[in-house]
Image (cartoon, rainbow, N blue to C red; front, side, top):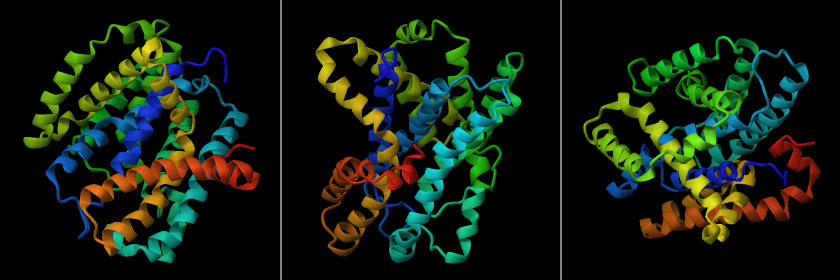
Length: 330
């Protein structure tokens, strides 16, 4: 591990990937097997309010200096690290979408394979890699030291309006880009402009932020004030980063922080692998065997997380071609 690596960011990624797996552990609410328990519905809404903005922020923060550089090598590296896993992830998911179509919110037809090129994947979760690639390219091409603040303001307004459903963007990849680019460029800005970002983070008051988040979430969820979505994302992201920084500094939490760091370092593999595992688990235990809902959610979470780690270490990392296909690493 790099000596000067910011451990709290890996911890934040570890918390984020736990939330991703948990958020995908509930049967799709749009199907006949959908969420039937209010607690899980609320929990899923809380998770979805900020977990992906967190990953975009961390990705932007950890990205090497992008602004003002037409760097062909950098663009190629981004394509390898993001588009190769995206394409592999999409193609490998097609048989699951066809065979387990009863578990999906919509059917999948093989004639739609070409749509992978425009960011419409049979694996719904793959959108993150596609949008992250274009966020990186957009930053390389259009952002510089002079306009970064203006682009941040514009991207926040765009996020506020699109996440808040004031404007609806039909094309899914563009919609997700509009939702999340602000968090990516905010991460880039925090790295290159806010030298004291970690000191700023230390001054964030966790408990008041959580209370404020809870109040806004009540208005957002119960009163259907969707314009609050981007503000909830910022608050959730800040709380997660502050908790991660605290865990990094707290010696008594060393075992917890080390485990979360490990999950953060493995987050790409977990993100890619957990979906197919959960589809099979949900099909067997929820659709076919119709076991207790709570047990099914627990099994999907445990198997999605644990199964991903086992497959990563005992299969993927032992087969170089497979590792390249799923991580883009040479």
